Length: 244
Ligand code: SAH
Image (tube, rainbow, N blue to C red; front, side, top):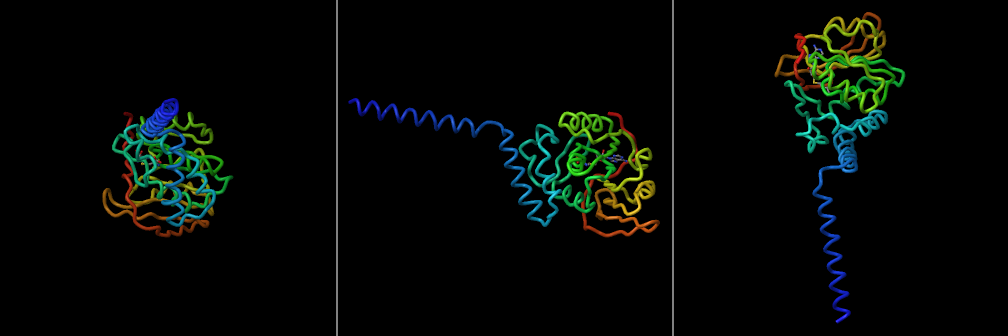
């Protein structure tokens, strides 16, 4: 009898523990599950697709992408595709962020200009690697949200400006590198002049919704060399300063 009671008690205990574990698994993702998902993404979509620069891989592993996506899309924060961030805009696909960062060959002493802050994710990835990032966003609400988010996450080396990035940011020029994350139909001349001698720019160019080519532009004195990095799809670079 006593033996049976003890067996029953052990069984009950086992069931209770099993239920608790199940409860845990059903809970919303936590920091640990986000890090595991992030590591898996970096392994498959970044390293697995040929990005080898240690600083870029470390930065992609360090930035919490789930902090940059709207709540409704949290479950997809570590999937390798773009996601909506409101105002008709998107946070870029992680592989493309890594590819563009890698193409700039960033050095830790670099000062970089980004045109198209969006969520601030690409700026954070750059800020993990370089000394200073200046980033411009044309939609007022996105500029404000990204600035607050980057402050909260401790990215003190990023400055966000609400403006039309077509004209660059004269006060902080010239830049070691420029990254444009919205597609114009031509390369804005002010960005070419604000690039340092020996500097690099990555920029998608092409018609709205049509074929866009990602260009790596390298400046040597007054000579600019364009190297194609392939086809991409970005939201258009607009010229209309919005304050919503
Ligand atoms: N780099 C972003 C994704 C960019 S989406 C990220 O990591 O989340 C492109 C962004 O460029 C959008 O937020 C859009 O509003 C902005 N944009 C479009 N035209 C612009 C312009 N002329 N100047 C500055 N930002 C612009």
